[in-house]
Image (cartoon, rainbow, N blue to C red; front, side, top):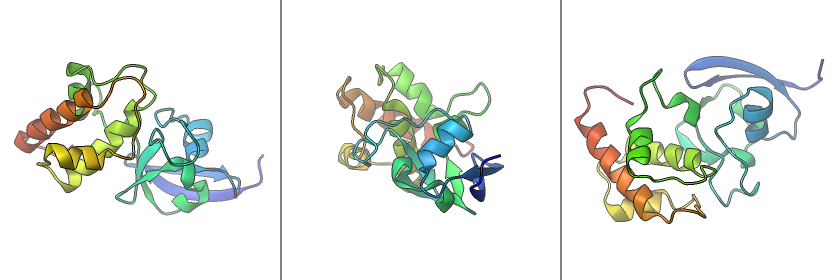
Length: 163
């Protein structure tokens, strides 16, 4: 059994407990200890956004947060976006607009867009581009991503339930 720090948290609306080393990143905990493979390590320095999650209602790069810092927190990852077989509107619109290619950046963009739309349900194109500025894509360019977020925002504003 590993000696480490015991952490109790909530991940995608489920209570979770794990042990981690004091210097272990939350990204490594999510992927290696909890099997949540959505967040990706693109840079390890917080510059690319591929590891983006929402921690206590704040968009963060999980490569810059220690696993122990999640104690008592609430984490949202890309794995928690869909409801069973029903994709979140952002996921659906990313598919419809072909707003992805290799997929490394996609989970980070989805989480950043979810965070943006939770705070601003009717963003302008400029606000979307600013809200997603911490996420880098080396394959698609950004126009399809922005259009997908705009389209999803319209769907979400007209929806009868929260996402």
